[in-house]
Length: 258
Image (cartoon, rainbow, N blue to C red):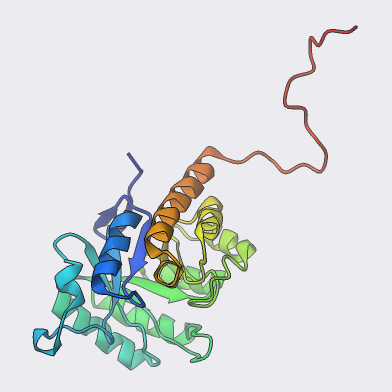
């Protein structure tokens, strides 16, 4: 049985969190969530339809009765918009969880770190379980932890880029200097990227585009599940040291001489 981890008062065993955008249909999205083994899915509050009169609703297919819904503030470029959107999510979904995004640059979708810190402080004070999307800046992650965030979510690479972990050194520093869960968010492209992040010691991964835009999303969802599981097992097992020269696989003591 996989080891569980905590986000505030919420407990999870799956270390893979799936997004709910860019799929061909809600049904395809659901099938990928099921194939991935994810227990939690994230929903962009500013982009999802909650009104049945306006057509099909995502949450009628990906039901909050089956999955933990993580509302996010994607598309927010100001502290005020992010805080207001988080409050809306709490009212609509009856949850204290929020994935906080305050975007600072439209082209790269990099977070506004100062704005993220300000919004996080407000939401923590209001009792939210705050999971902030942030750059791979160890100091910013330490400050978010200190103010009471339940986790930190440093990016691996720009959202949707598929470039994988671009700065493993920074992620290792973050992992060594914060005690809250570290969820790598954004930039993963394939299962080997997921394994790399997990082998570094990440608590979990959040991804969307890598599955939704794969040639075969269902197969990629399964591959990501296996990549996350393999990476976590490898991290727990502990890799051998890297060596410049060979090291014999079999002991040399007692070798017969001819």
